[in-house]
Length: 315
Ligand code: F1P
Image 1 (cartoon, rainbow, N blue to C red):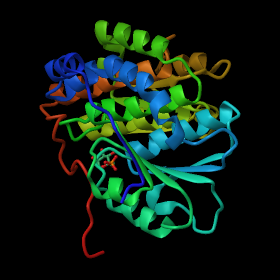
Image 2: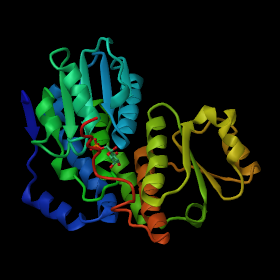
Image 3: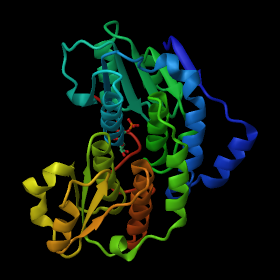
């Protein structure tokens, strides 16, 4: 059972505001700035369950949650708070010494997360961030942070993932207010034809935005069945540049290496970069994923071959 359970009640005002927005992927996407502000306001209350400065930490997740783990791990190291490794839950090595293991799982039911928590039981303090209290992951972790206000109806994760990252960034000492304001602006802007007309997307990031680049690429694959790729930005020239041409967008989430945007243009592609906080720029990717799915006659709330959670039995 959980030793330390933290479950946040919403005020009736917050409940009404979020309920009015929730319902499908578009409304979940639009609710992100509000969710991030709520998460930031909660960060101090859960600080005791999250990694302390100096701890050696592992973060694990699957799918979107793995990419958010990567982003947080890099951001934590960049902030000087300690060595932080990110793993796909199925690939976390045995035998490494950590002071704390953080698992991320919106559903709280993902099999690989449960197997990892079983393996770690009694060896290291564990904490789970989930959307659903009372789930197997919540029960198996030593401490639980339940961001139920950010749970989603859509199979494809958008606001839960960014809200847990907003919480974690706030815990690292970052002020998330600017990112939330940027996201409001992104949400108010129409999607440009340069993005809606593109056929191929290569996402690039550096440091903590590498995870966001992978997540952006995953969104377009999951929601709109698009063929996308993601790399650390300096890796672009080491092969990925080969596919750039007419119809390609190279989407830079974070700082662009010198000269790279020009190289994309010369190759016939479109370099896309904005001044927005990279997490707000990910909101633009969400918007494009939903719009591209609708344009293709797909349902981004219920994409083919995907389920809200991967629950494996008898394997
Ligand atoms: C992780 C996840 C999702 C993915 C799919 C299957 O779930 O891989 O990222 O979109 O729906 O599950 P969770 O452990 O965060 O609930």
